[in-house]
Image 1 (cartoon, rainbow, N blue to C red):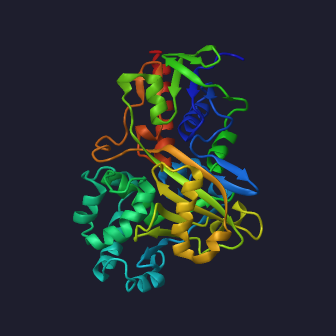
Image 2: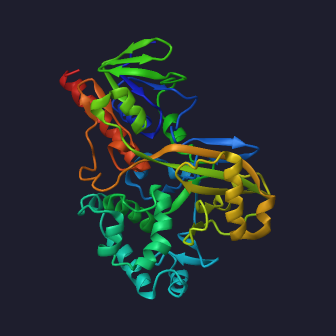
Image 3: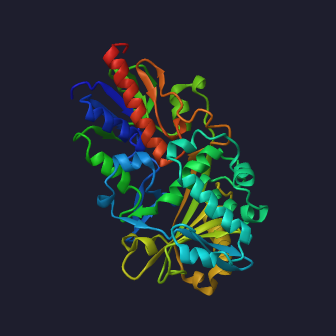
Length: 421
């Protein structure tokens, strides 16, 4: 095999989008991936006919880089209901998107989540955020998401505790809403203006679509990098590969391990997801259920097969229960605690659910507590000949991973063109 111009370490969204841009510009590359397939944290397993994403995923259709890169029709996106069922006081209350579901939104005005004034403020805040482009949200004054809700949205503490905390804790994987308000506004706008969706074949369909349009044979699997330098990658099997440039496109902790102490050690948030098989779904809608009562470890529940029936065998339901962080209990003990909580939600039917798999993902998202996004696009050039990309170099979103891959490819080509590498 001829020596490529660029070696890309990692076949997640960032690495694939870096390769995509290089291919568009006629620059040869080789992707080195330690696992057995593309996708990074966006993988989907098949278990007894069920398609299980490794951790519960939502895809937001209004992410600008995703709109530019992906073919949505080919993904066969299935959408979730724009709103949530809020578990409060031992019952579920529906909170609907005031702009997308006006009639249901009107009924939500009188649901017991927050105050009536909060519902008007939610509609007003949504309109104001939607009126400005996504890029604008990353230039607004940065604060904690919690303080943004208090002072910019002017929401009551009751609304924050009953809706925003349980909902966006599941998005940012941290319970206190200390995440940058810039990231919150960027993501909130995507929820307001577009759909929360899932591909019919699971979240892995997104990286697979990008990979399918790359040059044949450009990715090598089972190739774990143990050291990198400008134009050089050492693999665990002992090979030393050379190229004009190297792009490190792995998650934050792995990137820090390869790039050394000067890169820093990015902090992250973990999540745990339990998937159950059932003969029937506990709710009929494709809607997110969130726990304002804090009745147990589960933060939110979804029935992905209500949105995309292809994720479960015919006549079966796939249920995802998501937790923040990584619990200390073993899987059997954790299952018992989760079943107890969900029995309080759905009654005795939970006893008949069959546990399919437990996913524990220690680094599911980079920590982007304010003021993490004072510089929303962090540098991707480590030095000439060595580059880095991933959601830890941008917003902690699928959009950030894709955008950083494009930026890394641009930096590589600038240096190749100027012959600085």
